[in-house]
Length: 350
Image (cartoon, rainbow, N blue to C red; front, side, top):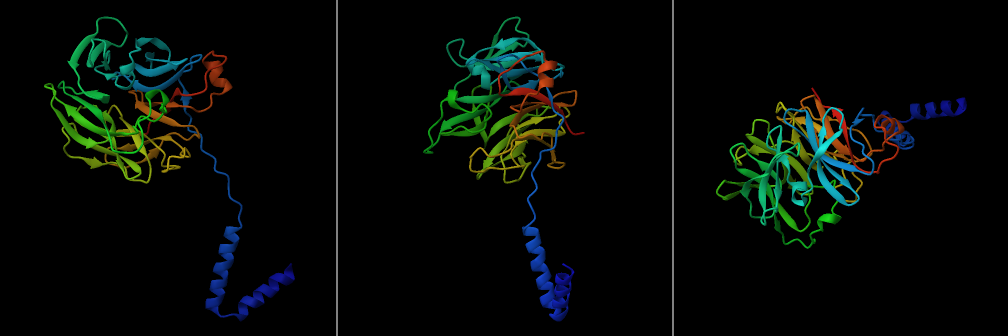
C-alpha cells in the first residue's frame, strides 16, 4: 500500500501542474461517483392525530371563525356527510347535512352558521343552516350554473368555480370515481373563478380553482394552472391587483389563510414533484407569508397530506392518509379503523 502511494506521488510530481490539476479533478469526480447513495429519510413533523372513528374517513377540515369547532367531510360504507366537530379533541357533535351538493360547496357564514348548495326546493340554490343542526334552513339565493367551491362574500355576492366543457380529448370522470384528495383537477372541463352578483350577473375573474377568502373579506387566494405547474395567486374579490405568490415547478393548491391574514398554508408536491401524473409525488402542507416570503414546510411524511385549515389556536388542521400507530388507537379508544384519510394537526409558523 505504501509503495502504491509513493508511486502515485512521484507520478504527480513528474507531470505538469495543469495536467496534475486535471487528474485530481478526475479522481475527485471518480471518488464522488463511487460513493454509496444515502437513503432519504423524512424528518418527523410532530403531527398529532385528531379524528379516528370506526369505519370512517375524514377529509377537508374547515375551522370556524371563533376557532372552537370545525366541519369535515366524513364517509363510511359509501355514504358521505358533513360532520360538526370540536376543534379541541375532534369529537363529533352532530351531522350538519348529507346533501350531496353540499359536499363540495359548504362554507362558514359566521361562527355558528354554514351555507351550501342544494336542490332541495326543486332547483339549485344557496342555503343557510345552523351548524349545530338546530333551527330552520333558509334559502339565500337561487343559483343557475355548474358551480363548485362556493364562497359567500360579506356583501351578499358569491364567488365560485364555474365548470364548462372544454375541447380536451380527456373525458370527464364520474364524481364517484374521482380521487377525493384531488379537488383541483376536473377532467374534460375548464375551471374559472367567477363573481356572481345579487342580480345573477356573472363576471369571470381568472382561470383557477380552490378560492379562499381572506379574513378581512377583501382578497382571495387561489390556484391557477401555468403549463404543467399550478401556482398560487392573490387578487381582490373584484379581480383587481392580481399577484403571483408561488413560482416553482410543482403543483401548489388548496390555499387557506391564517386568522390574522399574514400566512397562507397550502398543499404542494414541491419536495418531490411528479409533473406527469404518475402518482410519484410527495404531498405535504407548506406555508408562505402573503408577500411571497418565508416559505416553510410544515409536514414531512410519505403519505399524502392536504386540505389544510388554520385555527385561532395556532394549529393547522389537515387530512392525511399516514399510518395510524398503536398509541393513536389507544388514545382514541378504538381497536381498529379504516385505512385512509383522517384529520391531523401541526403547529403553524410564527
